[in-house]
Each structure stands twice: as structure tokens, then as C-alpha cells.
Amino acid sequence: MSDEFPPGADTAGIGSRMLRLRTERGLTQAQVAGTSFTRAYVSSVEGGKRTPSRRTTAYFASRLSVDPDDLFFGYEAGRRKKLRQAVADARTALSRGEIERACEAYQQVVREADAQGDSELGYAGRCGLGAAARHQGDPDRALGLFREAEELLAAQPLTSRLQAVVGQMGAHFARGEIAQALVLAERHLLAAAGTDQDAAEFALRAASVMPLVERGELKEAGMAADKALEIAPLVKEPEVLAQGYYHINRALTAQGRCDQAEQVLSRALALYEHLSLRTEVGMCHFALGYLAARSGDLPVAETSLRLAASVFTETKSRPRLVNALAELAEVVRQQDRLEEAASLVGKCRVAAREYQDPEQAAELDRIDALIALDQGEEAACVSLFRSALAGYTDIEAVYEIAATCRLFGDALLGWGRVQEAAEVFRQGLTALERP
Image 1: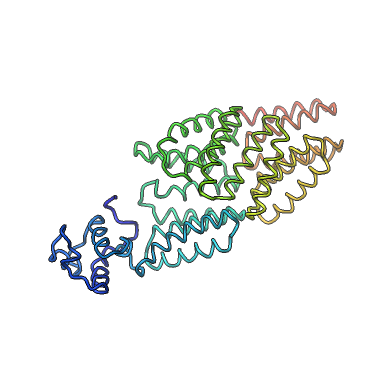
Image 2: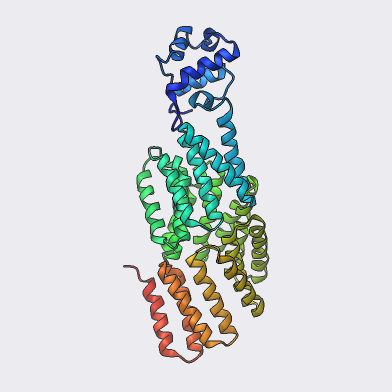
């Protein structure tokens, strides 16, 4: 046990709480002191003349048959332990799609923690509300909550603030702010250098993968993934590991390292199933479907994506449902089921009206462009490709700009529009050029 008190602990009130609990239990000061301390020392603590260390306070808590938190903070006896459990229960509830229940629990934790000046639990409650906002497709609110959470623990090591930092990265990415997500990761990685915060380094390197891929920096994404995998054996927190493995698969898939991508996804899936995190299990099925589609195994991809979509429907995770249905639409289109593909894109557009995700909007335009191409609708195809390119350009998604230019250029060549095709191909190549 560290000898530092939890952030926000009311150390000045330890003595008075010891006195109250000892009196309630009918114990003497000598009984609380036991063999490790003197009655006089207990008396000086109860009188506010001495402040015990965290370890000593924990010893007195054991003599009083209470949790150390009951001496660290001013909650009613046992209340902080219940609030910590409420945070854990809300995490599982949110992943199951019980959004209202989870949010109510997190809000209650925040209210009580703020009243006690308990920054550690206030942080946990705000991170939970941030995760709920992301689940519902509100990255703006999520970003604000994760920032508030991190500010509460600003003086603590990065590992203590990790959920808030990675949460901010995810919110920036969902807002189309790819550069900001990477700047955040790089800044915190520099601050953590040489501090042996393995979980933090692993999580930040893994979380950097998706923004790097979107910027077309596949070599850098692969290096970040490989470095994270080197650190992985040192990470003890199962959810941090699972989330990292999920992120890492994206670089491996983009680099064509499909066997490795499948391996890390299998690890993530096993961990999430063990943690009973239903939405995250669906995310792994989505990633497996995406991987199968890139490997050309369309039937397997369709099965995995339909499974993912059913999970996201069940857990009310609209942004992820749109992702799954959009990818499914592309897989169905490649199997020449154009009417079904168009219907799926239509469902995506309806669902996406409730929130803003610029990358999703661009992706839907690109899939619709390919459907229009297959249906011989040249004008619609051109318009949709240009709209997709504008969307990807706005968020500097270089990898997707290049991919879209390749598809658009091929379509233009097919119609004999060679000059326009050359311009589009040149646009894609220019996007890939790094300063």
C-alpha cells in the first residue's frame, strides 16, 4: 500500500472519526492501539494533535473493523465502499445499454463525492458520464466531462488520470480532430517518459494507432502498435489491456498483418467477455468483420458484422451501430446485393441524424457513391465521391482521402474521363505526401 492518502482525503478529520467509531463500538483507546501503538498516541490522534500516516490509519481502521475509507473521508461508515461498487456496476450497466441507470448512478457518485471533496470518486463519476456521452454519440459533452475529470487529479501520476486522457483522445477523434488526439497522446507520453508507468504508456501508444492510420502514417502506426505490444506483458489492468489490443488491431489490419490482427482481437474479445462488457464484445466482432472484409472473406465478414450490429442494437450504442451497418452495407454491395446495401446506408443516415460524426458522414457518402457506380448512375456517383472527399479533407483523414481518390479515379477512368481521373489520383498522392 502506498503511504499517500487518496486525493481529497480529509486527513484533518481522521481523529474525530476514530473517536466516534471507537465510542460507537465500546472500545478503549488501548484496544484500538493494539500492540503496535500506545494509548497515548491514539489519544493524541483523536484529539487532533497528531495526523497518522495512511498505513497507520489503515491499521486503526482494521482495529475498528471498518474500511480505511471510513477514516480517510467523512462519508457514513461503509458509504464510500458502496459508491466505488456503484461505479463498477454502472460501468457494466452502460455496456449492456442500461444508459439511464448508469448515468443516474454516476451522477449520484459525483454529487456525493463533490460534497465530500473526494476528487478520486468525483473523477470516476465524471469519467463514467463521459463514457456514457460517447456511447450516445455526444463527443462534445464527453470531451468536457473527461477534461473536468482530469483536472480533479491534475497533481496525480498519469496512470491515475489515464481513463480521462484516453477518453479525451477518443472524443477528439469522434469530433474529427485527429491532430488534437495525437498531440494529446504525445504530450502525455513525453511527461511519462522514464517514470515506469507501463499501463499509461501502453494505453497511449495503442490509442495513437487509429489517428495515425487515419492520417496515412501507417509506418508510424505500426511502430506504435509494436511498441505497445512489447509493453503489454507488464500491464495488469484487464480493461486497459483489452482496449489497447482493440486499438492495436487497426494498425495491424492496415499493414496487412492479418494473422497478428486476429490474434490481438481474440485477446481483446476474451478479456471483454470475462469483464462482461457487452458493447465492447460487439466492437471486437465488428473489428473481426472489418478484418475479414479486408482479407476478402465476405461471408465471414457479413456474419461478424451482423452479430456486431445486433449487439449494438441491444446496447443502444448508435454510433457503433452506424459503423457496423455501414461496413455491412459495403460487404453486401461487394456481393452484388445493391438494393440491400442502399437500404442499409439509408438506415445509417437516419440513425446518424441524432449526433454528429464527420467521418461517418463521409464514409456513408463513399459507400453510396460505390452503389451508384454499380447501378450506372454516373452523376450521382461523382457528386457523392466529391462529398466524401470534402468530408475526409475537413478532418484531415489522409488514409481515407487516398483510398477515396483511388476509387473515384478508377470510376472516372471507366467512364473515359481520363483528365479528371488524373487530377483525382494526383489529389490522393498529394494527400499522402508528408511535410
